Length: 150
Image (cartoon, rainbow, N blue to C red; front, side, top):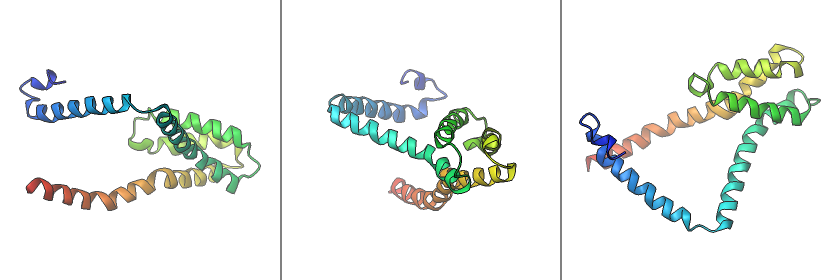
C-alpha cells in the first residue's frame, strides 16, 4: 500500500496509509497473543449478535403468523441476508422489501401482511440505525473538527 500511495495522484494520503499499516501490524501482534478463551468469547459474541439479527423476523412472525414454522423462517432469513450482502442498492433498499414479500409469501395469507412484516423488519433492523446516525454524526463531526483546528 505504501508503494501504491507513493504515486503522485495518491501521495497526499501516504502518511495516513503508513499510519494505518502500522496500526494493523500492532493489532495483529496483540491478537496473536490472545488466549483461546478470548477467541471463544469473541466468536460466541459474534454468533449471538448475528443469530439475534436473524431472530427479529422470527419474533415478527410469532406476532403476525404464530402458526409459521420458526425453523423455516430462520433458515430463509439467513438466505435473505446472504442475498442482501450483494444487493446493488445502499442497504438493500427496495430489494429487501421485495425479496421479503416474495420469499415469505407462501407462508402468509396475503401480500399485505408480508409487506407490513417487511416494513417492521426494516424499521427494526435498518432504519433505526439510520435515525440514530443522523442524530449522532453531526455532533461527532463537530467535535472532530474542533480537534483538527487545535
